[in-house]
Image (cartoon, rainbow, N blue to C red; front, side):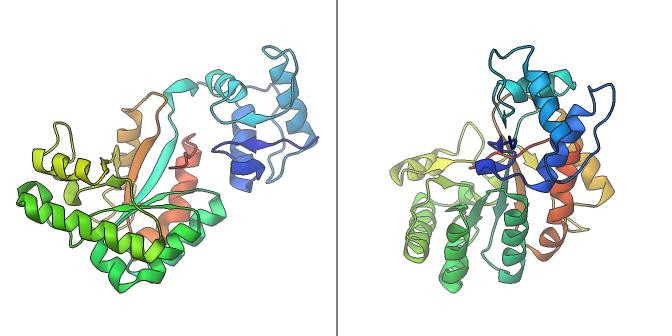
Length: 277
């Protein structure tokens, strides 16, 4: 019987090698004799899942669904427990540079991760096919304003124009109407929200959505894999707990694209899994 690692690990029953290795690593924290780790589910891993389930399921099925009973029991037994929330990856700006965007999309596909992209209406108008590709790859496209101004200091008419024009640009390019707005710089996007931004967002049926974890990938040295940045990111993660997904902020840029595969591997090594938007 094959093991289905569903939910955020091996979404749709696909056993991505890195996700299977994560399950191996969790079991090897509690088993007296470690399993031989591989990229595919082994008979020993299947047996370990069945044996583990016998203590709390009347009908063990060998399935692990992130967020389900087996996952909760396994992460609790390994010391992770419910304090480790899933992560939602999000990317601001773009869809240019398009080469970086394509690289990011390819890396996400390989990892089986879906993300949110908060794009600029001006760039969508310049690169509509790139915006459409984000949607075609199964990700969410959201509103990040038209030209990246500070919306908290802008007049209400400007805020409305920035958001409405971006809604129109994204709808025209992708056929999708965004449901969220992330204001540039996060300005006005933390409770209590900027009153004008909140008013305009509500008029356009947009939820204001900022982030939980700031990778600061745009700061020099750009990217996510600088040791000092990784320590900073881990500190932010360690300060967060609970069941809701944590939103991890990155940007569409070459350095982030180059680092993304290794960054995802690092997050998994810390014990994190990924939520869909």
